[in-house]
Image (cartoon, rainbow, N blue to C red; front, side):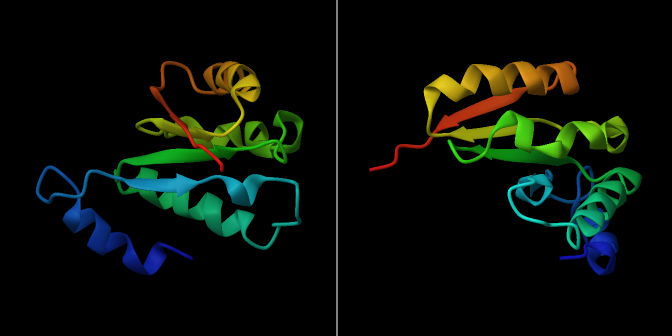
Length: 122
C-alpha cells in the first residue's frame, strides 16, 4: 500500500505531539523468491516518505529455511537506509540460520538494535 495519502496523518500522530511511536515495515517484498518488482518501488517510496517526514520506523525480517541470505536483495538498497530504522525485528524458526542473518544485518546497519523472536512451528 502506498503511504503517501496517509503521511500527513502519520506525522500528526507521531511523537512528540502524538502517541504513534513508529511503523514496522516488512521486508518480504525485497525477497527474490518471487518477482516483486511491481511492489518494490512502492515499498522504497514508503520508507523515503517515513524518513523525510521524520516518522520512526522499524524493519521486520521473517527468516525461514525458504529465505536464504543470498536471495534477499536488501543490501543493494543500502542507500535507502541512510534513514536508519529505530530497530530491526528478526523473526526466525531455525536457530542455525540466525547467526548468519545477524552478521549480515549488523554489517549493513551499524549500531541498530536487533530484537530476536523465535517462532515455534508445530
